[in-house]
Length: 423
Image 1 (cartoon, rainbow, N blue to C red):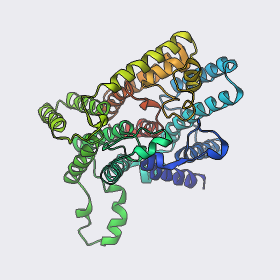
Image 2: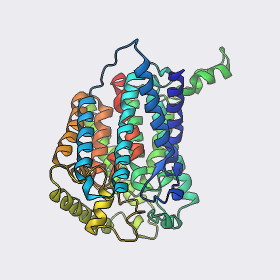
Image 3: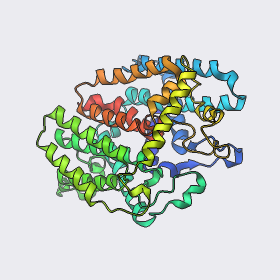
Image 4: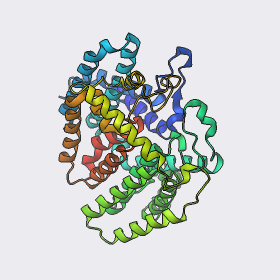
């Protein structure tokens, strides 16, 4: 019974994923604009709690910790200590809200433990997990294209503190950069699947299709192979190009180069370079700064953001300011406007994920987080999908706080829990 509940909650989580920010729960009735809560948070919370209850009462099988358990536990301990050490600097309400964000990270990391433990029991997902992710990523691309052509002007969202993007594909995440990295991870997954000859996108629904077609019918013709994957790549790449997100483009370039190097597929390199150059010159140039690929204002704003993060880290070197009290520290330093510090979507994070870790958990948290990253690379040094995905994500996280973006965490923890089956 509990396993059915866990399986159902996980399926709901996957269904909610492509809806991104549209699944946000307004908390205006609590007068808490500095708290962001999503349906995915609630589902994941229930999922991990259900699994925890299942493991407590399940005495039949001994639980084996996954490879990343120790560095994850160490980071959590340091983050908790950091929050306790810095609690006198904030009000009780601010300490509680900061702890809620830490709790969110813990539960999202809990997905890794759940899937690592139950991957053999989730038979509907284990075999075709990469196909499910491709379907999710492709859905994100389709939603993004609908937004781009039907709702190209997002200026109306400025009242909700979202950037007023104009003729940029922002998708359901309402941000070209975060939508872009999800599309990049999808493209990497499709390409590695093509190399491995294992990526057949309709496999999750093959069984019901076979039943509908009948035993004697040519149901295998419904089973999608490389031509359909190539079509998906084109659609997802077009969506990626229309984000005008240079961080996502760079992440894509790095991820594909990693695949080329590890697969020694040198013939792809000139195709990749021609594709990127053609994209640069053929993309439409809409009015506004966002459509200017050569824009410089974002570079200067990020450099200022990096400098501010380093100032905070320098003033709190050992344990940082507490995970995640960053919004309140930025307010105290005057880095956020007085009338926007609570509602600004950029207030709770830095433009660089690594600098955010350093500023909020200090050198001890920084080193423990690097241990997680190093352990991942060591455990998967020969796995093209993991290495390419992580290298692309690390590059992207230099420019946006993508390592702590909820939907990216879902994707990566899921990948790390299941990828051993698909080397």
